[in-house]
Length: 235
Ligand code: UDP
Ligand code: MG
Image (cartoon, rainbow, N blue to C red):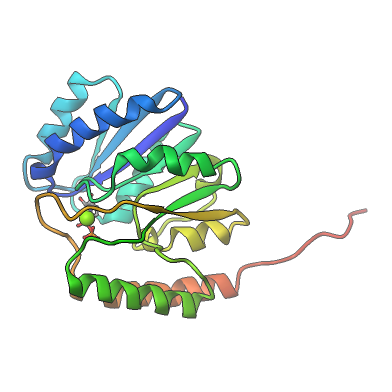
């Protein structure tokens, strides 16, 4: 298996039909076998049934269902562990990311271990755009980074590199840093970003800012205190 596309889903019934159609349209251009792993993060709407039905009709599709809502990072983690592909692709279920950008990210994977989509022209409400700009600035300052867009879901990883990362609740906002901390190389590539197609955004300023800041302190600490040594010789 070449590619595993991992997509967390939380109450996205209004987006799924269109998402299935877009994936069917765009993924066959990948030169290799692929699977799509949808991880239902405890949705209370019709998403789980829709995913199950889709999996029955489409042999590329697998579905993992959580008992309850555990967060986007947990959903990614379950998808990563289930992934059989050498390359893991992540994206959101709401089509704010465009699966047509995947080949562009894959092109760069020859030169590094992960490629992160940078939503250069972000299509979100003004307050969200501003708060994300500030969040990226603070994140870069405190974690000594220069990542334009850390939390964008559209990313591609060599599975080998991804498996080195220890995920935690909130880790999805720090993937470039977490991967680099494992000695891997990450590149950013500008990608298209669409307004949310349907359904509701799961994060606002209130449920993001404090949590993300708390996590940032943890990442800063982990990065500073990570073990750095080279063995000169053994006898
Ligand atoms: N999501 C999830 N669990 C959550 C919150 C979100 O699996 O607790 C999924 C959601 O269904 C979507 C992705 O994570 O596929 C990103 O969420 P959203 O689009 O609401 O985030 P935003 O684009 O507003 O940052
Ligand atoms: Mg979104």
